[in-house]
Length: 196
Image (cartoon, rainbow, N blue to C red; front, side, top):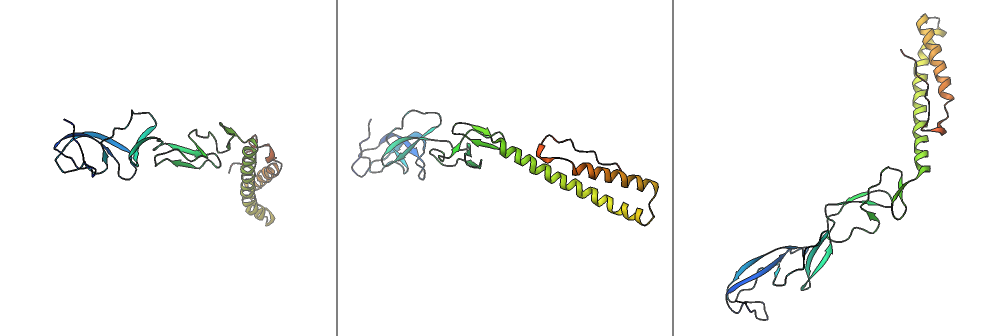
């Protein structure tokens, strides 16, 4: 038996109707069931008698303004900014932001060329040089911090033969460090620090 409804949506007679439920906030299709509708009562809130279309992967049916529309659905997926690699997790129905892509970059130096990520060789080289320069500065400081007290011991004629040998080894090491060309990074053959 088909239930008829008046202009206010109330059943004109009691019966069972197939009801299609949707989320009251997003309009997303939630499912259907058969409801017993008493005479004079309307269907439950956030539901309709109109069926959505067929399921489609990556899409979701949304009910709005009295009709179903099939919308893109990327919720739960990670997208990457084509400007700065910033990541977002898609949380809402609809397409991702236009400057985000699903393809993940493979390095911190990747840039988007319009269809794929490519390595910015200049940025990669600059980062390697900056890292090598920082490493050189650290090593030189370590050498100087080790040399200073050894030199004091020699200057005050208090150094042992072992301390004199260590001073010479650390000074040679410091000279070799000053000759390291960081512009060749990451291909640097660092001199070996003396052992204590």
